[in-house]
Image (cartoon, rainbow, N blue to C red):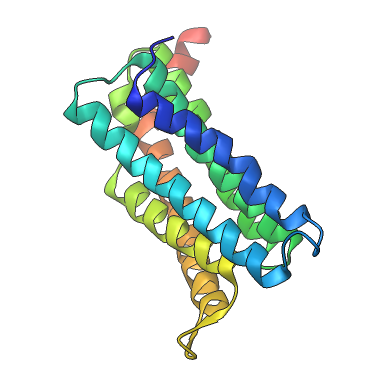
Amino acid sequence: MPFNIPILLTWLRVALIPLVVGVFYLPPSMLLHGDQNLVATLVFIVAAVTDWFDGFLARRWNQTSAFGAFLDPVADKLMVAGALLVLVQLDRVNAVLAFIIIGREITISALREWMAQIGASKSVAVSSIGKIKTAAQMTAIPLLLYHEVIFGAIDTHVWGEKLMWIACVLTVWSMFYYLRLAWPLIKEKAGNLH
């Protein structure tokens, strides 16, 4: 297993996931409810920044590796799934939305793994729809974790909810986009089995 700064940042992101979740299980004597929201939001934002930064450094320093390419999306998916599950439990995200987003991540991960095995991973490379979906999702989650009104006017729950719906629509759209790209190969491989 290679070890460098980008991989260290990815491991840091993995380590931060239990903090985002665990903060809400601390007793009020350790952390007040409003402070739980703030701490979880800040930890999630730090984790999201490491996501961008580790990829940037890996490319800049030419430290990309097969292990890093495997660990990075796993860390991302764990981070999003962990935050969504907490938000469902706190009744800040609809369980159906969380299921759609997590289900899409599992489906596309499996599709990418299968496409890589048959040497066609470029067919399901990240699209602009996927990037916009990620941006909406990664903005919605901290807004919903914070769950307060800021500057006396911006209700982070309302904006987070709107962005989560946008992310969910883009999630379904991008999943069908990737499946459509992969469909000719899926049909071809299925035909070869008969």
